[in-house]
Image: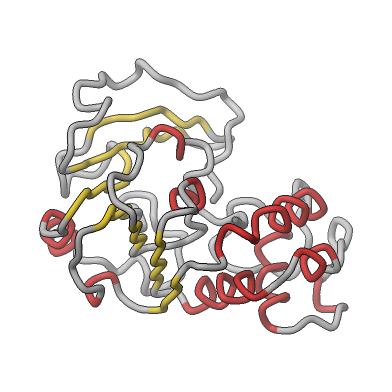
Length: 238
C-alpha cells in the first residue's frame, strides 16, 4: 500500500495464490501479498509499532484524507506541515523509496502525488482487515495461508533495531508447524530453510535473488538460479 524497504511489489505476482479464505502476514510491512488477494480475510501482524500505526491510519482514512495530504518538493521537510501522527508517519514513507524508517526530507526520486493517488484508490480493499502489533510467535496457529516475509537473515540489517534480531532456527520450526498453506520469503543467501530461487533482482548497487520455501509444491521447486532475471534498474522497495 505504501513504499517500504523489502517490499514484494515487483515479485508478488510470482507467489502461489492463497488456498485458504484467510491470509496471515506475521511480518506485515507493506503487505503486498495480502493486498493482491485483498478480498480474503486478512490478519496483519508486525512488531514495528510505526508500521501498525500507518496501517491503522489508512484503514480509517478516506480518499479525500489521502488526497488532502501535502506534496512538499525535493529537499523540503514535512515538519513544516501540521500533520496528525498517522499522516506524518505515512508521509515519512512517501518522501523516499525503499526506506525502513519514516523520513522528514523529500528525496530526489520520490513521487508523492502518484503515491497518494494509488493509496486513495486502494483504501477500500483494507476496511475489513485485522491489524495487530506483536511478535510472529504469539499468533495462534490456524488453518490459513501464511505469507511469512521476515527481515532477511543476510541483507535485513536496514530494518528497525529489534526487528532483525530473529532466531532463524526457531522461525524455521515455527513456519513449518503452521496449519494450512505456508509461503516463506527469503533470498538465496539464506539456509535456514531449503529455499528455491525465484528471480534475480538487480538494483543500483547490488544484486539479490528472491527465494521461496513452501509446504506446497511451487513452480520454483526445480528452478535453476539465473534462468529468470529482472531489468537492471529494478527497485526492491516495499
